[in-house]
Image 1 (cartoon, rainbow, N blue to C red):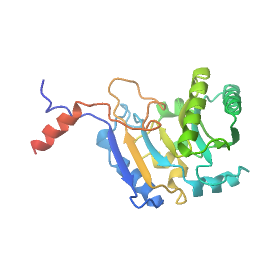
Image 2 (image 1 turned 180 degrees about the horizontal axis):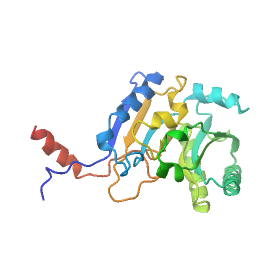
Image 3 (image 1 turned 90 degrees about the horizontal axis):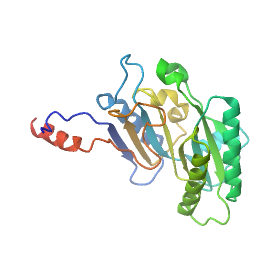
Image 4 (image 1 turned 30 degrees about the horizontal axis):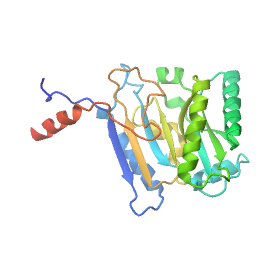
Length: 252
């Protein structure tokens, strides 16, 4: 088998502010990276629906404190709360049932839901197939309980909450749930991520890290849920392509 023709794989990029200072430039530069990865992103025959694009960021305290104040959610210090990103069913009854179930699980784990926020989006940019299966996107805010002593312990507790919810409510997808990081993703072309999620273009959204991903789907049907990054990682899924890339660069 020849590896010289192995060239299809997802695109991955990262930006890190090594001095630890938060900046919107990190977010902007990461989005610029993924916008240049069209050759590493799949799309349908219409050219209007992508296989998936996303970004993993730190939770921006300055941004969320401001937007949550507008909806009467009071956030305290950074990492004293968690943010969850949810893909809910569009049917109102099903969505409300899922939210009540999640709140019950959170309460049973001695935590408190501070409130919900509908994520600001621009669905007008989407292709027909992506729009037809677009979920209802909301964020939840959870207060860190007093008995939790560290960020890591809080995220471990959030993992338990998430897994209980996922087993009980398979029709809702938890994109991310953490006191440290958050994921914005969907069934986009590479230039649609920034345009769809209005949060990302807000200069007040700041981070020290960003991981971006453009998906090239080879053996699974594209969907909102299957876009990357996942909750902790992003990968290209085509391990043999590493050798293909080495061969390609060696020949040039």
